[in-house]
Image (cartoon, rainbow, N blue to C red; front, side, top):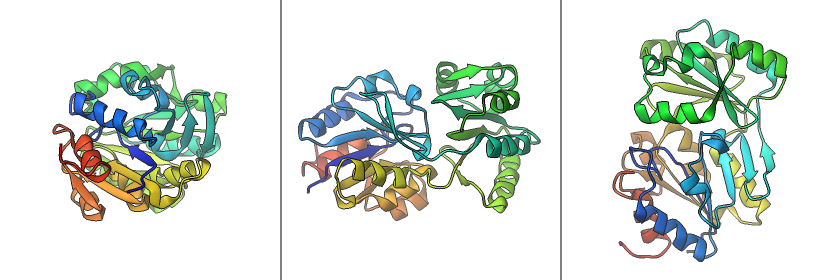
Length: 277
């Protein structure tokens, strides 16, 4: 099978429940790179949120971040492609979101922007200890998010939301979807993620593949969440984790083991190398 690019979701897919890269998954990535296959982190995180143990693997050069809003050459520190929300549009969205009981972070210049009322009370918004640690490492704290966006006047890659109340989440999702001017997805049960049109993992994979001279049929994607649906559909081969949603598993070409059972390594060994080990 002539796969030349493998796009990998991180949380719930390549990383285990403790946000760690297992030895088996690491070995599978090395084997792909040695075979000349591009291994591409494809995540809702910013590039600064990709763990060093992944970015430091020799041969991992490109990353798709913030759900496809940014395609980046990490070796040359160069942005290849973006699909962002204008700062004016982001302000309108943030003012709407601020009327709900929700923690929100716009992502600007590949960093999450937060403020003390969220940063100092993460557990109140349903963040696990692993998620709290990631937030501490990847957010810049400013006194007021909306004022920061208004003053900076920079495009927003994504707006991330965390909810302590799932009914509140459902109400806001319905209001955002009724607007019809943004894409709404989710990566974990108590969050929502707002992106511009075109900022999907699936479309970003195809744009990167085109940049590299690779056909759609030569791509493979592995994921677990709602925000992985587009890449499972658009990649030449779409693989869902066993711990993924029922809808994602139904759309996939293959279903692999869970993220705590080295599911990425299992899929690569079976599909790329034709082994079960």
